[in-house]
Image (cartoon, rainbow, N blue to C red; front, side, top):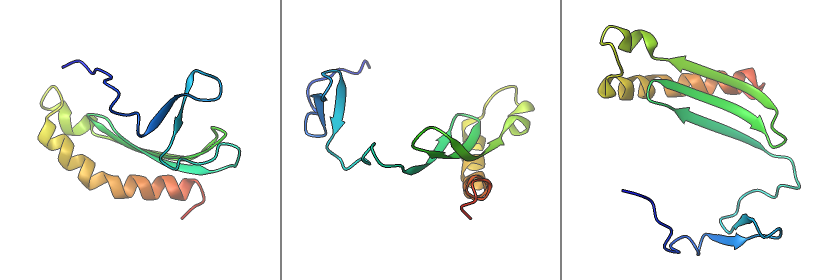
Length: 104
């Protein structure tokens, strides 16, 4: 199915912004004029990753757990094995990213 904008997000976003091109979030996102830090978590089909990033784009710490060895014998990604590996690796990957950022 193709995504279609029917205006359903008008209560969350205000199209236009100050420059007429951006969206202004009404959900309480951080004020971009002040520095803040974000923990980003990513789970692609066969990797689990986390990074601590400062609002100016500087990566303070990151970690990645690959599932290449798990799926190698099958010749491709096995969804059930991938799900289990994500569940098993997520806490350790987050801990490692926080530790490498000095935020233990």
